[in-house]
Amino acid sequence: MNYISTRGKSFSKSSYDTIFKGLAEDGGLFVLENMPILDWEEFLSEDFGYDEVSAMVIQQFFQDIPYEEILDMTKKAYNEKFFVKNALKIQKVGDISVMELFHGPTSAFKDFALSMLPQFMEKARGDKKVIILTATSGDTGKAALEGFKDIEGIDVVVFYPTDGVSSMQKLQMMTQEGKNVHVFAVNGNFDDAQRGVKEIFQNKEMEKWMDDRGYVLSSANSINIGRLIPQVAYYVYSYIELVRKGTIASGDFIDIVVPTGNFGNILAAYYAKEMGIPIGNFICASNENNVLSDFFQKGTYDANRSLVKTTSPSMDILVSSNLERFLYEITKDSERVAKWMEDLKENGMYSVGEEFRKEMKDFYGYYATVEESQEGIREFYEKYQYVMDPHTAVAYKCWEKFKEENKGNYPLIVSTASPYKFPEAVTEALEIHGEESHLLEETEKKTGVEIPVPLEGLKDRKILHNRIIEKEDMGKVIQEEFYGSN
Image (cartoon, rainbow, N blue to C red; front, top):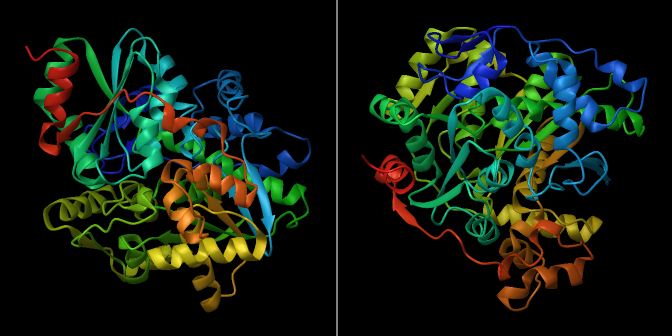
């Protein structure tokens, strides 16, 4: 199978090599030349577990990796580290279903992909020493640290914005154990951290410095196709589960509602549709950093605005990397995509025009304010005794806006994180009072929702990483702090 760059100047024939590279040499993102088609109805004939479904889906994209090899990886990935049967849970609540992706080792959806990527990387690296560079808006960082910890031959470096993550997300990273993990807070926002990581990848002097010392760079962000593809599986599995439970009939269309900032999670849903899963509409739910919702409404991507700090920090992003892959899929024109990305870099914006807006007709962009998100948490709890995190609440409010204007299909709302990862926002919305250090316990007492195992006692763990750096020093830190500056 051939993997091509969205910008047209890089190619790869090996799945492992493509995963290992992470970012294409021309600065683009790798995509599969031809989208595979999945006979999803075969999953209805037997009671396949999540590990089996995910292995079959992933193998469609990485066909040069034997199915048995991928199945062995999925069995290792989706085992007792997840705290519900088959790794995810679908809750029917009122007239919608919620796909809960937060029952893994870090209580967020990134656990699904980052339980697989370290295994891919171990196979791909051979005898090379690898440095995994990751920028995070909250959840990717902890999931990458947990997934790669203590793996021989691989170091993982995480950069997060100093004040751009929740208190629990920050604690998860600052207390991370492991002999090969390195965590830095960056004075700046997520876009600064993400830009810094990309610049390191494209810096030829840094590449030579690494090569001279026997190191190779790779990424755990969803710019890496090995991070993105495992996410496709949970959309396939969720559709099968909705049919199995009788929530929908086989062949019925569903609408997917995704809270997203970097566009990876909703892109995975789009890939599932392209493979043949009956998905009707995509509701791209943004917070007040509504660059994506504006894009789908107007056809212009304009990052020339101030970043707003919200209660849903994983979406506090103005430059959505994975949108580049979507642009390639709807145009199949790498030169045009490269030009748009250059416009974004130089001018902070680009417009796709009416020709390609028609190709985005299944996508609807809406956004919710902090106040609306808080209102959503409160409303949903009062109505159904179900506790949402702020990101899921953004999705819920955007779904309400969509259905006011459109008929739509049966909705599946993607819940990306446990509400306990955002205790300040949730307790304020539910009017839960108490000492700051006991907000989790007070929430559990009022709602009856158990504190996730990975978050129990987190506030009492030892702080191991508390270095704060300037965004200009990200490359320098890697050289000086870990591997010597000579």
